[in-house]
Each structure stands twice: as C-alpha cells, then as structure tokens.
Length: 490
Image 1 (cartoon, helix red, strand yellow):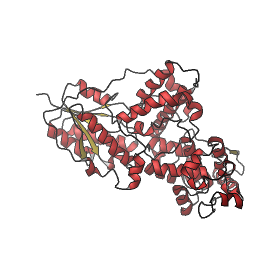
Image 2: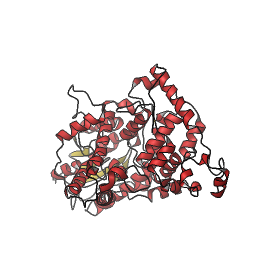
Image 3: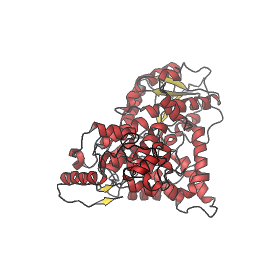
C-alpha cells in the first residue's frame, strides 16, 4: 500500500495551476487535503473580520470542488507546527506538500512546520504558486533589493516567461478513508451579524467565482481599463484582488488570460495600452511582496527612517469620523461607506481616503492600515503596508509627502456625474452636481431644496482643506529639518 501525502492548503485555495497539488499528484500517492486554522501563524496580523468571512466561503467552495473529485477538505485548528505533524503521523504520510508564503510571520510558521515534520522523519516539500517571481530572484545590478517600482518591473519583464499552466485534475487519488475533520462552523469565521451577510453578498468566493470574474473582466472591462480604472462609478476594474489574495486564482493564470485576450485582437474600440496597464498592477503586487520580504519591519514601521518621529496628531474623533464616512468630504465618505458595506473600495478612492487620513487629519498611517486590514476582503499585508506607506510618503517608491490629494477636485475629476457619491452618500443625492462635491458651499435655499441640514443630516467638513494642507506641509518641514518644501495638490 502506498503511503499517502498531505496537501497543506494555505493562501492557494484552488485546484488549477497549483504547484503543490501538481507535485502531490506526481508522487502517485493518495492525497489528504488539509487546511489548518492557526491565527498564531499570522503573528501580529491575524485575519480581519472581512477576510475571515471571505475565507469561510472560500473554504466551503474548495471542499465542494474536492468532493466533486472524490475527496474532501480536512479542517483542523491549532498551531500548524503541532497539528500537521500529528496528522501526518496519524495517516502515515510520506511527505507534506505546500506552497510558499512570503509574509514574515507566515515564513517563520513554515520554518517551524518544516522542523517539526523533520523531527518525525517527514519532509516538507514547498512549491511557489502565489507570485510570478521569488523574492530575492530580482535584484539590482549591485545585488540589492529594489526600492523603486519602475526599474524593478523592467527587470521582471526582461526575464518573464509564462510557464505551462496545469488544469484542475478531474479526480484526486484518495486513501480508503480520510481522517476526521472539524466542521467549518467550528472555526467561527463568519460572524453571525447582518454586516457580514450583506458584505459577502457582493462577491462569489471560490475558484469558480474567481475564474468567472476574470473572464468577465477580460471580455468586458479590459479594453477600457486605462481610463476606466480611475472612475469609481464604472465597472472598470477587475475586482480580482480578494480572489488573488486567497489564491483562488494565481497571477500566472491572470497573465495568460489577459495576454490571450490581447493577442486575439480588439474590436477597434479598445485601448492598446490596456493589457500592459493592467499587468503593471500585477507588477505592483509583486513589488510589494518583494519589499516586505526584504524589509519585514515595514508592516508597522516606515521604510524611510526619518519618518519614525513624524509629529502625528492625536484626535480620536477625527479617526472615528473617517472610519464611519462622516468627514464632510463626499468622495472620502463615499469610499469609507463602500468599504463598510462591501469589504472593498475602488483604488482611486482608496488613494484619496488614505491621503485624507494621513495628510488632512495627520493621523498615523498605521491606523489606516489596521482599519483596512479589518474591513477589506482583499486585505493583503504586503500591499496594504506598501500602499499606506506610499500615501504617507515614507515607504518604497513613495509619493512625495507634499503631494496632497484635494478630495473636492478629485471628486469632480473622477466622479464627474456624481454617480458614485450619490450611491454611497444618498443624503446628498438631491444636490445639483455642481454642489455635490462641496456641499458646504451650497446656499441655504439649495440645501433646503435637497433636504439637507449641514451638521445634522450630513456633517460639515471636520477640517478645512487649505488649513489642513498647510499644517501637513509644516509637519513635513519639521521632519526634514527644513522650513520650505515643494507643494503639489492633486
């Protein structure tokens, strides 16, 4: 009788293009698929509420996919370095297969599991399925890790070759009997609250949902991506990020589908730069993971050391107003409310909302990162950290601190008809578009006609843009030891 192998699912909850599954299948041994719920493996960043709700549904979908192939998912709970060796011994496993993760705590957890398995004579065989390039494989000519995106991505493109992608197996070889599993409900991932049920109703977690989303994007949105990506009221972005984060789809699969669509030719109405622009976003994902891998402190500390003592303000009421979408700036509020309702926020609005927190309110970027971590279904430690440091101007490839987004002009530029704001801030829906982006400038007559009482039905701005901008620039000057800094308002 051939001894079985364990297939340890992590952030790779798919059956197609899964290197660990391919290796397990190639062994010719019966496969025991297992997922271990071990929050301790995530260090100081255990999954937030939105991510846990997504994970619940993703695990359910994966189990259904496995059952359709003559297997099922074994769920266990506890420290991975204890639970996996115990299961491996129970089933007399000859090896454990898994795909690598790159977050600092997950890397350490993998090392602990490998040592614990080795202690009982069982090897851990690790594949690479979540990134296009292994961290450390792309370096500068001097051998240092890149800290600027453009040369990093240029170096990636010079060495990129799309490998042959595997399809999901029709059946998984399974032992005569699979070990016991706890129930998915025992993990308490899906909060018994209306919020969670409303949020996940906007999504279809799982590999099938990811593939459907990719195909829809390639067929309907890719051709207009270059311009559509900045319009939050339009269906112009892929919304693949949560699927990609949990590994329901891999970056190589996305690359192939986008290039297949591009090579098939357009109908004459598409944007020739759209595929390149979209794949560049995959590049930013790669870059963020490489940066965090090489600079593991950047999940909580600035990469640029001079920002460690930045004079942040401490106003809890401002933080709460931002979290609740009650800042008085309609585009910021719309984004924060979309986030709470759906677990997602359009990328353009994320930039504006993040800039508002760290520049207008002078709140530490770490507070924003923690809030997004808990509320985003696509909360990815590397991308979340890099993006917040970009907004604060203290990280790799950071936007200059003096670049301050004006939430009013950004709304007028990217939501010109006010459709996005009217959807998520319905109390302003009856305002004329010319007043929608700055309701505090409306006359008493216009406000009354729209059914708005500023300070009651909708808040007055919690800070004045011009005053907040000057305060942010002064804070930067004190950090840099200079009395003057460049200015740039977007």
